[in-house]
Length: 164
Image (cartoon, rainbow, N blue to C red; front, side, top):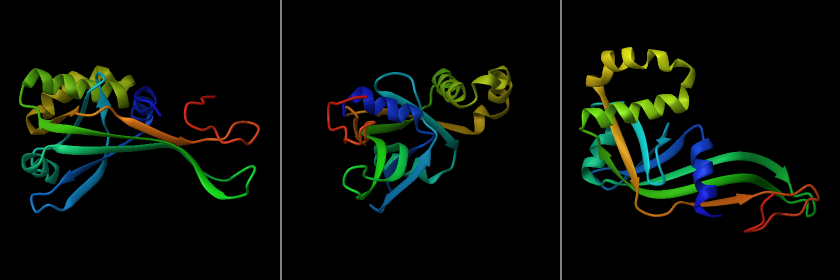
């Protein structure tokens, strides 16, 4: 599937698994709540002392993976056990944000995505916790890609390029 489909999955997923590389070369991945600002930029936040930050310092290249609409099913025509799903992956570079204004804007985007009805409390939360919060920007270095498996109302699998 194309980049627009992949962005839709990344935007709708309640979390995105971000995979890092530890300083010893082993992988480290975990689900994070990302918010996107444009076609290349995502933000997440966390503690100032964190394994993610150690990984970024060692190797800033990260891999993003998201899945939505994952439903076990039996193929309507062939009877095979399968999953209907929508998924997306992307590669990017993670950087710890040091500019105060960008940190606040990154946190604002995250809050607007996940707690839009509570933006009236945003400024007070920033005043309380900005100094003890790390904000990370992920800039995509490749166009994201998506995959899906989906059946239409007649039970036919909708192959690449065929939408609803």
